[in-house]
Amino acid sequence: MSEIKMPEFLTVESALKDSGLAVTPSELHGLLVGMISGGLSLDDQTWKPLIYDYTNDGMGWPDSAIKVGSAVFQCTVAELTAEKLALELLIPSEKESLMNRADGLSEWVNHFISGLGLVELKLDKTSDALKEALADLEEIARLGIDEDDDLEEQENLFEQIVEHVRICVLTIHAELGQQIHTDASKTVH
Image (cartoon, rainbow, N blue to C red; front, side):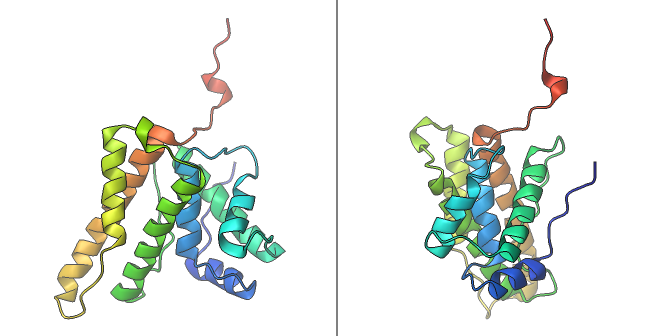
């Protein structure tokens, strides 16, 4: 089986813009990861109407945007359900300014939280670890870069924050997200 590869940020950005959609790659990926981590079904297309409602007033997307959105969804599912957990955030690359990357991370985190809301996350039934991870993400969503401070230090802090976001997301997904069950896990009696 071939490995599913996440489309490049600029490819996703171009497809979304060319389709007239007012959503960034970071926002789209954050929404999808939030919905998947919140327990969205992985076996059907229920993510599409939720995304359409949230990003395009309930109207469907053009084919080119659906194709890219589906690729992002499939790659995200593959990352979150693999034996070796990995999650690459679809945010601007290191070639971009720290300000652009920080804005992308903020968009990603805000939309991750929104994605959890779209699948109607009920916090009263969750663990303290999940609540703490969500509180951390809410705080991270409000962070900004101060252009007057040492940018090298902020660059290092930014990388630590990105890693903490991954850990928080994986914590939430581990508790609420669906896992793909393989035939090898079935027991024959």
